[in-house]
Image (cartoon, rainbow over all chains, first blue to last red; front, side, top):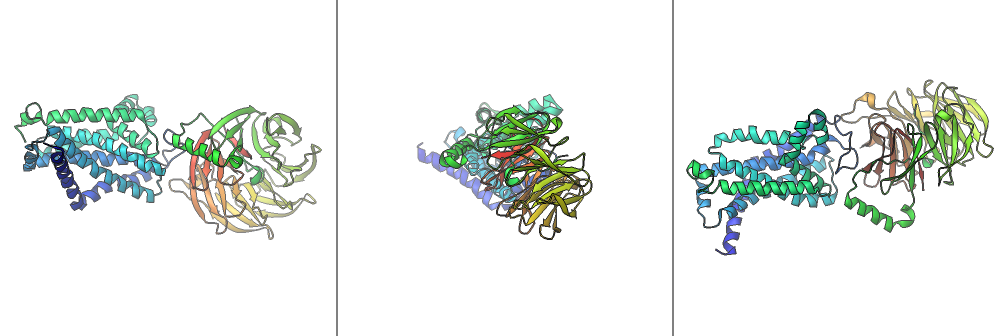
Length: 267
Length: 343
């Protein structure tokens, strides 16, 4: 095994994912439609309701659509992470995962490659979304558009790793609806994507605490601060730790001798 | 009732609040700006009257920092700075006087006989006269600053509020809130030479730098009206709209117009917006989101920034006019009302 093998395998996996992304135009469009509907419809309804308090990284009053833009970037990545987990289950059912997993390369490397492929796609989607938001008069400082890239990579990895972990639990494609109900919705709604923490605290301390420790919130805050060229170190540490944790669990989950795979009787 | 204070070029504001975390890049940029443009940028401060704190806040708008808060008297509202930037005038309404303060130290130098409950006033372009609206007495008092005496009382409509002097020194205009009228007072005779009926509850009036137009905001009607100085007739009525803001919240108050007459800026009170009005076409081109209940506005001396006094959110928003963005809102104290900028 030398580096060339690793390189070739990684590009094989990433290339396959990118090819799938490019050829499935509906998937690309639907990934964008979801946050855009939130931005244009949902945010418009709340436009006057929020924006009366200044909280970092903002330095002045903002419209609600400005507030939720980083949250919608997180939403794109959350759904993308779950989509990746869906495709893992699909691959397992179709048998293509078997081909992947019999490769002599270490399993963690294959999973990481798979993960990076998904993150690459989500980062592209986020930048297109930010471009559309720009045209809608939602502007961040230009440095923010650079700083948001590492933030998106990390948040994408964390959410993708969560997806991988979940996919190791899901046996059949049909069970994916459960992931929607039990993972995506609570994670999204109990986060700082749609409302600031102080607003949640006004209604319930419990909800505030749940949202605060929700890894998705931390990923959104990391993106939010990065988009304004600032570093939120708490969010960075939290997101990085969550990534390591989820990734380690996913690697164990995909280990035939230890993880969920053995209980399901292999891929 | 709040109104526009003196001529826009003379007015300014200031505010600062508990420091909002300032981004490091912004700090670097600001510092860079200070170093690069040292001479011009250095010393500008914004003075903000704080109606409830009985004080004037001194703000460094470039650093976005509140420098100090100085007690000045009961319920300070209208504020203006002398043309030589040495004296600050503050209407301390509940003290029934207008105080002259040293612009550096904000120490009281003298008191002017303003009449009861002074709120808004205007300085003459030469800086030798002060014109005060006496809302309860339905009159305008003319004060000779050198003599510190009231030299004339002019009867106007009911509840005079907005008051302004034309930059060419020819006209003094007083707007009566209840009579819905602007009174054109000849500064040679101190007699009303003309009246113009305007929309309901006129609040502030401001001349363009060339004195050819008078802009009047009407709070209840939600309109801005442009009057031609020569004919004293309304030449345009401007309406305001913003997505997500109901019409009843569109209550235009303070107005400033840039020297070149390219843009005018109108504070829209509880709409929490400042409207950008093209001063040639009178189209509303943009709205800036600022703090709650924005009353009065002031330019920086180079007219590259606009400062807004936000009465309910207790802060001053700083608008960068080059980039057309609200760059920061800084807490200053309770009920900021008027602003004056000291270069």
